[in-house]
Length: 460
Ligand SMILES: [Fe+2]
Ligand SMILES: [Fe+2]
Image (cartoon, rainbow, N blue to C red; front, side, top):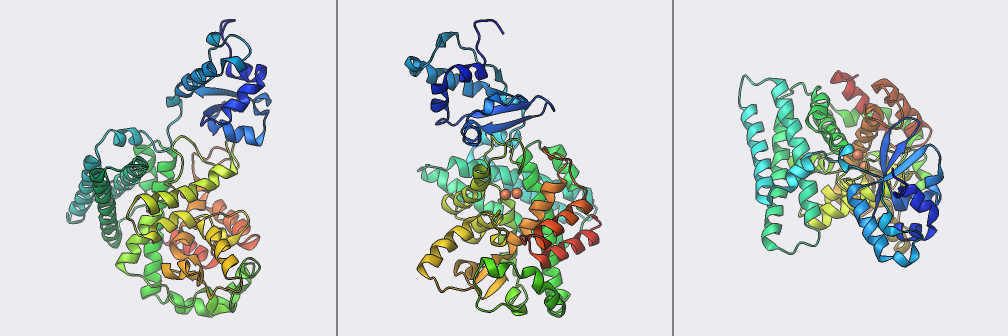
């Protein structure tokens, strides 16, 4: 660096006013951990909020992306009077944004370049390919799994890009194409239901996902989707054909102590075994497809420029929480998807009202309770969306299924940045200890069923 150049950190050190200007901007910093060499991204405003002197922490170096650096230079030019030193001699150290994969992978740009019609056709081709494969007697499980993986990744990103573009879009034709995309994504779920009914071995989809996309969030969303829909299918089978509800009745007394913390968090009309699960969960084709779709879109509210990981270097509680609300609003306000689908995104971190949870349910219930202070819940778990909207039941079945798979995926994720990934067994022990026994967050009955499912599928 020549003596006339100025690093980003030096700029901050010499000009406290610059901080005040930059914290108002939407700037993402590349944060290099000098000890580990690992790079993560964080919003300037979030780092500043956590520690106004964040850039002085010795083990980190901070730099701007090329595009943000250009914006910062323009901005500082405008505020020239406030800045010490010669602004036209300022050279910010920059990193190419390409040095980190975007959260939704290279597919995001690929799909951005497609017209809405091409995107809709892309999903149609995925449906046709999957349906054709299912009618082909010599098809292998590997081929079916590969088609399902492609369809999961692309349909997620197509929805993400297209719904984001629709913010403020008044064009009726564009709205019509978005309608087509949502209708085709719904149809795709029907092909997935069909594929699941054939019982192919889908245990290699994780490797396939890693090969097919480098987007950290798309990888997570596709893995969670493909594992959750198998688990959902197993649960449906257990309730419909294997008498799960009846079997649970005899064990319900032993489950009751695990649910006990709920009484302190929410009011109940009665708290007895039938409160947990008042009847067998009911499934029909429409509800199954809606459950699947909600899970497919669950992290749509995540910012494509950020890598999310709890407790990591870029951890910011406000940003983490925002994704559940943003995902809910995106699906609810910008699409014609059923409200129950949006709610899966909005409710997937509720953690049964635990203080570390967050989401749309608890915030709307807070408002509702102010109006109806004597309200109490009749049930804990339901698959009827109306029970959730009317606050008859506390937890929405697809969101509770998703919570389990979501946490499990995060713990065993091989790309886990802030800690070594856990083995499946370690993850299940961790979840049982910390998210059921010590602090009730996940559903104990569904968690036991999850372990049984993993065993049956030979995933543990
Ligand atoms: Fe999430
Ligand atoms: Fe997630």
